[in-house]
Image (cartoon, rainbow, N blue to C red; front, top):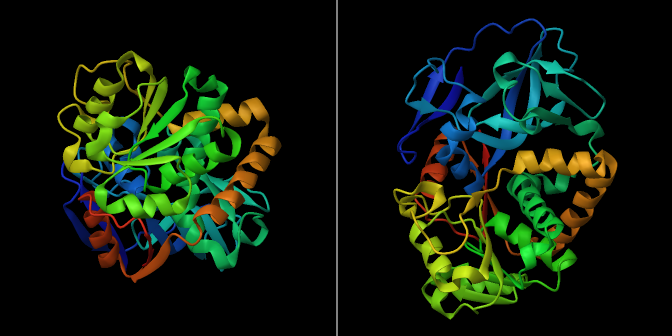
Length: 365
């Protein structure tokens, strides 16, 4: 018996656990049993922008055509439990993009000792970044003792890394300050950590809710931490903003406060779903300053690897990753929950905006 969490696309706080009988395994395919995955604000963003960026298409429901529900992608670990001449070995473990479900069938291609690409037809129109899987037995990034951290922080940290790389390549658009909303979010922490390492002259200002101020300050990653109701105290200096919250009113207030001092407005995620407003991720309609631009990490990842080459790009990411872990390793406590019913509950709670930044959620289906 297989299980999956079906999320209502137009109201993502509504989710149902669905059971089904597995289909026969196709030729050249392998069946993965999902062992663990994390639930983060990143997954909420996948659901929010799912139709526009194709996130619902990775793991379609049986009645995918015109369906009002979908399966949200997660990052995690799985084990090969069945093989039909796929090139993988029953019992081996992998890491990569997984559905909020108990099982996944993949068709491995470009197989090497360290990984493979899922070449199943319906996934080929999406970014190749999401179709790559690591085979843990030969994966240099794998640390059995830090699997939880990799699931929780890994994809989010890399997005933060790519934002910093992009901004630095643009000389931060001439900005003196970088303003990060939802400063307690894991992607924001990743950006702040990398910026602290490689762009120390740019002042890092974190905006967060009043209840998260102490947590954000304790990370030591920000030069200044302000509550959302203190936007009107932001320094009128050349700045860039990186919006992880998706709160249209908040973004409009930042634009209004800084006006033409705001050199670039970058949109990354939506941790405050209920406050996105009719403007969606692009904010509250007409705003002062530059037009907000959505940051799509996979495209930036492809560009960085092309510019630096795979070896140098991987080296830079790894160096910053280890420093990031030392920065935040003690700030987040991993909470492990059993079963997909827990996955449904944790996801819908997170979609509602009630996120404890000091908790890292891991589900073991």
